[in-house]
Length: 144
Image 1 (spheres, rainbow, N blue to C red):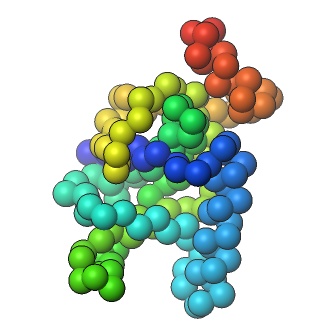
Image 2: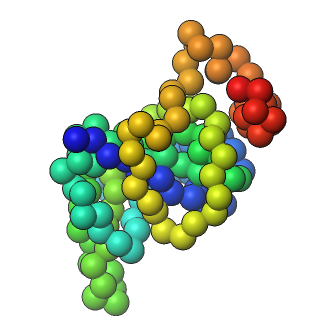
């Protein structure tokens, strides 16, 4: 059974700034001979590894709203210089916009059940025609 993660994208102003950061990380990984995926290292290692690797994504909260996601491709253990075990979440570098969904601040990451995950925005849904900030405003107003 699939499960997702949700995580605050600290420092991101928009989907565009998150995408630019991810491109930077992927370029650095490729330059060092690593696979061309985006990597996010977090302190806690998820317990539901199999469910995350069964089609899970990381949903990014930007400025109080879930706005996009990256499909997860793997989870790898990392040991920091301090000897503490961490988790590298490896994901495809393709950012998928989703229906803007308000989300209160939280620390770390949280699991997200598939039935609670916002739907992807596609050209067919008309969602990609609007700029992200307008989609967010409409969502705040309950008009979307």
